[in-house]
Amino acid sequence: MRLRAHIDEIIYAEISDRRQHPDSSRVDILSLLMAAKDENGELMSDVELRDELLTLLTAGHETTASALTWALYWIHYLPEVKRKLIDDLASVGNLDFSAISKLPYLNAVCQETLRIYPIAMLTFFRIANSSINILEQEFEQDTLLTPCIYLTHHRPDLYPEPNQFKPERFLARQFSPYEYIPFGGGNRRCIGLAFALYEMKLVLATVLSRYSLALAGSSTVKPVRRGVTLAPSSGKWLVATQRYTSRELVNSR
Ligand code: HEM
Image (cartoon, rainbow, N blue to C red):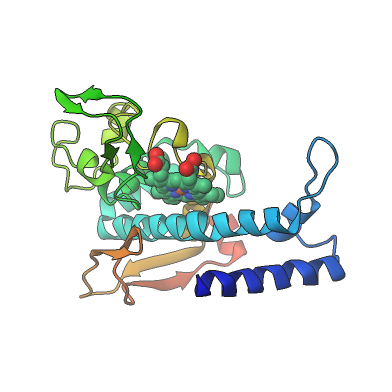
């Protein structure tokens, strides 16, 4: 509660500062939210702005950042994956974000990243409104159920060799919303699904085209709990070996 009060203080001070010094050239998310109007032409209140920012900070930032970190780990741990991904990226223009977001192998790498170590191991819990039978198991009304994303994603009948990172499984078949649930499911499924995947693809495409990266020799990377999420262990395990200039990028295309 003390932390929340402190965070509120910082956020409200930022909002108040922006209101006092408006700058229409700013394109950061708070500026965009402050400029947004609803269908009646109304701006958001300070409380609404604070809620949106807190959602982005707590639900949207670390989740996607951890997913991206895992993706970079797998891409550099498995040279074959990196090679195929670079080929995939080379087939579209650098700034063609719409084409990048549709690349099949890039999509498969993102899906497999979120399968093997789902950022959230569990969905939020559900309470049975009435008694229900699931897979021959009877649950009474009011039973609290917590679907486990990690266990679902590691079922060998759905994902043969579940501990192996294989993007190809997402090219070979489509998984149903009951088999693949990195963003949960049903009507409380993650509201940021499309945004997170789009962001992951664009960031990966941008980073891979601007930097040459490599895993640092001996470090082992393991999944560790970070609050409610599952993140790569800390340490300096990925290093940039080269940075491409815009000219080199243009010449390489
Ligand atoms: C890779 C990135 C992300 C992952 C893996 C992820 C995963 C999840 C999961 C598993 C849930 C629970 C869904 C359920 O119980 O069925 C959830 C809920 C939620 N997520 Fe995400 N999320 C990600 C990114 C984001 C982003 C970018 C935002 C916001 C911009 C966001 C906002 C939310 C919100 C508001 C909920 C609660 C939805 C509700 O209860 O109706 N998430 N997310």
